[in-house]
Amino acid sequence: MRLRRFRWAMAGTAVACVAGLAACGPTDDSGAGARAPVTFTATEYAYDGPESISGGLTEIELVNAGEQAHALLFMGFPADKTLDDVAAAVGAATDGSAGIPEWLTFPGGIGGIAPGGRASAVLDLAPGQYALLSFETAPGEQTPDVAKGMLRALAVTEAETVATAPAADVTLDLADYSFEMSGTLAAGEQTIKVVNQGPQLHEAIVMRLADGVTAADFVEAMSQQPPPSGPPPVTAAGGMGPLSLGASGFVTLDLEPGRYMFICFVPDAADGAPHAVKGMVKEITVQ
Image 1: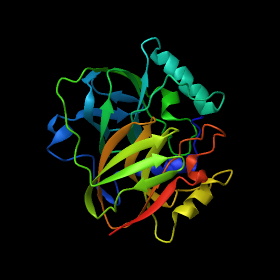
Image 2: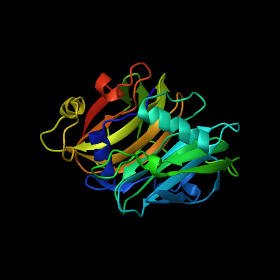
Image 3: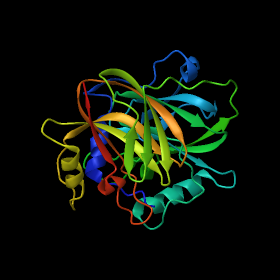
């Protein structure tokens, strides 16, 4: 599996928490929300936040205080590896010279948000060490944040208290290569439980479609080489970062009426093609 993504698609994720998304993240007072959120602040090209946190179901909040889009993705790595090992593995996977090593695990994360934006998700974090990183790119550039040093370690300890999961309005199952949702999303605040049924790594990025544009139009454009120039006809509306097989997390969105899509940009383990071009995209209407 390779980490290469279409740059035009990544540019679309730079504007999370704007049109169509009035609030990003859980606001429920029960479950994980009863514990104070763990906040990380992103700038160019670093994160400001705690070096160690308690594990279990944890609300993670990202505040973008930078001048360009940034994400907050989690990658777990074993005790016999270092952050330098993660950096080397990510670099090789990004340039296509190697696949993602099996010793990396993916509990989810928060996709790119615009400068001044704020987003959150509830992740189930096992004790251990994690890398925090961003693959966003600056406008007009091809170099991802992680290659500019936006990578740091986080220690996760045993949970001090047991948090209950937030109540979900719908469950979204990810598989090769589909999204299956247990119900429909209505306008307003909705909590989605995202579960990766696998067998591959998957994510659930939410994007609002511009008028007259379909999910199929977007995927067709993404298949063009080189990718189209100019801004994509979508607005990122949050979603869940990559999840390992069997992993799950929660994301709460406050959606305005309109047409949206779930989409997975994770490259396929066999040929490196984004899962979206293999049909892993689902268009929905929010009323």
